[in-house]
Image (cartoon, rainbow, N blue to C red):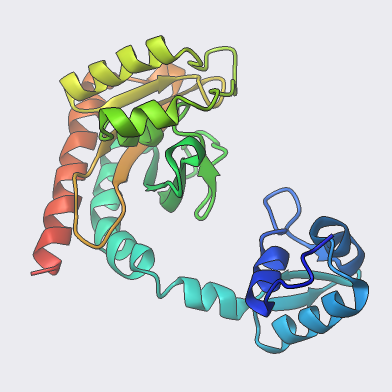
Length: 255
């Protein structure tokens, strides 16, 4: 059951956080199950969220995330500054490779709950299908951008990160702390991270961290290609250069 002393904002967040990739549209009954809020309180809250455009009524007496919430999200520095600045360089990387290009940031309330949050994506008709989407998140240890971000963390941060078990996404996922640490050492040595079918079978990713930029979380850019087209010796330098170019543009904009 919800805490009776819980504030309105906390209850609103309890509702909004129910919407996921698997359940983008939810009925009031389902929201009641997920939040534990009393029916009367929930319906008043849904009416308010709908009135302000944070939720929208959908077919089948269900609710979806509203346009106003999307509009507010686009005012985030991740959209206005990072993604908009990165897009021309991501486009050049896509034109050079013809493959999926991803931009992600480290979302880490705590190291043991950290993930890669995808804030930009370019794809084409010839690109291999991926699980990623803008606004979606994936584990750090199974994605190229995630490993690139992990490689920027210090020893204390990584110690806390490894306190939580690493979940296996495919049979190729690295779930051993020792093996992943060795992989991160290789990432630092060559300047870019790789994954081989660790998030999705048949997919290989190559990614590089941007380096620190004031006012923004750690970020990385990468490409995802089919195993048969994965020429790391060619893709690695292209991704590293894209990361450098994006950071340089971000730093120039902030002067």
